[in-house]
Image 1 (cartoon, rainbow, N blue to C red):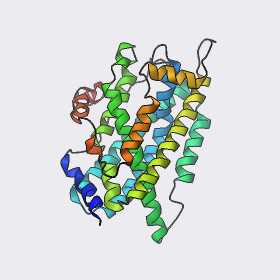
Image 2: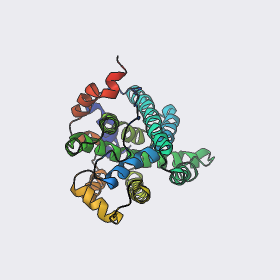
Image 3: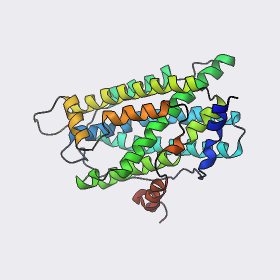
Length: 298
């Protein structure tokens, strides 16, 4: 094991949180289809979460569950168990709103089938065995560790962004976004540390990060553009979707491109570790007051 990997494997000792799934419930009755008032594109941008994450997070949970026998560090093993539970809860919760969209006439079937193909056909286990299976598992761990970096930094972005409140975003949807973002920030170290524990090769981390960033960006923009074109409502002039994206980014309702490029650059640094991100306490504070979390305690 080289010195760099030794540093990365043990970095997670800097943060010590018990990662546990919170079994929240959201009631979607009455949530408007344009839940960010006056910005159809921003609404559709966040709707991609409800299409991508159910399949993606279930697949991620399965891959990390397969990894558990390879993790002999007691604390990291415990964190991965909690991480798998949180990801499964996220998948089920977003699927609930996906069903709500379908019930309200938003046809998402072609997009869901596309995502299922990517997750199961391209990134499935392919029935590999032996050394090939080990290498492919390491590749998928690298891809998912990079994806988790983006979900964590976007989670922090959602928590810090007061523009949603000022524009009157539907409170139920805003709670979903911030609850999910908080848990992503809470378990930000876990996927990265699991990848390092099982493999830890920097060049694999860099390669899979580039693949994950480009793949996610392409999937997100293609799907949000398709949803935007299909958005129900009165017939009205509709900006070309790239212009609509830049307008929403200017309004601070979606992350801008520089944010995405900068996060990729930071992740590619050899000495990077997720614990270098912002204050994790903001996630814990939000989870202590989230209406969906509080409802489970009553």
